[in-house]
Length: 357
Image (spheres, rainbow, N blue to C red):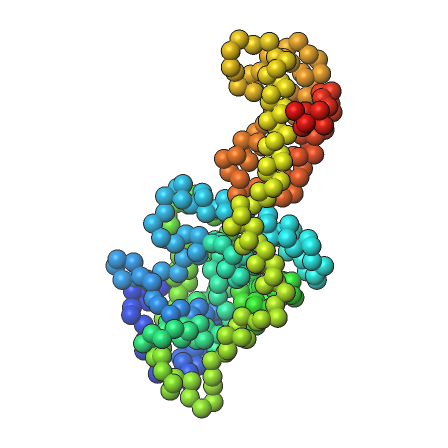
């Protein structure tokens, strides 16, 4: 993510200009808007200012926060992939406008997962509403809240990739399913760095403070809003009558139970019976892997030889299912379950007979 100008680091290291009222903040934003005519200003409100050991503010997407090893980052992305698959599977039960488009676009899936706090994602929540940002910043009883102002390029579409600025910007309130009320009520956007997942040169390039043009420390007392303004209620920010909230709860419940636990058990039971059958008919000395046993029997059986590549594909999926279960969605599991059943038939094995043994 490229810096908007040369002084962003100075802004990030500053403690923030103290603001006493919402009206004062509005005037500061008006002045900033004039200074950045080629950009649109977005806001992020936080109850705390999270800084490095050098005192510089950081605005990392949730998936990149903290001290990260390669394995921990891979695990977070596996959970993200599994959560996205689960969101697709659960949403199929609901006939809601915009659901089909959400299933097709990873950026919308990630945006919904982020906005509904289902799991960590490579996207950062921001808003075009200063009032929403202030509501979040003053949500706790701290002495101060913090408002971060980010200067981003103009949108060209609902999902905007800006290769020059190295920025991905998603306008959630116009691309999320209408039943997902949070993005609309919060005037929600998400931003990130395109095409960056696990491999990056410097973690710093993923920090949204690269676009930071102002940081304000707003006083958290009853005088901040004044007579003419007020914070948004929690009932408004997090609508109770939000049908997508039910989908969120189902996805989180799936994660707690271990994604697709019942289907996984069925697949592994069928695979184990195939392993036992292949080892039984293969002429080998001592214990060998299922891969070697199948290949050994394929040397003598034209049928087994014909389906060697299919067997290999299913075997590799089985290994992923055992060691990387959270990266596998229900659709993929269903697909390989059908392939495994068809392999039984193609090899001339009676499924019911093997399942009953």
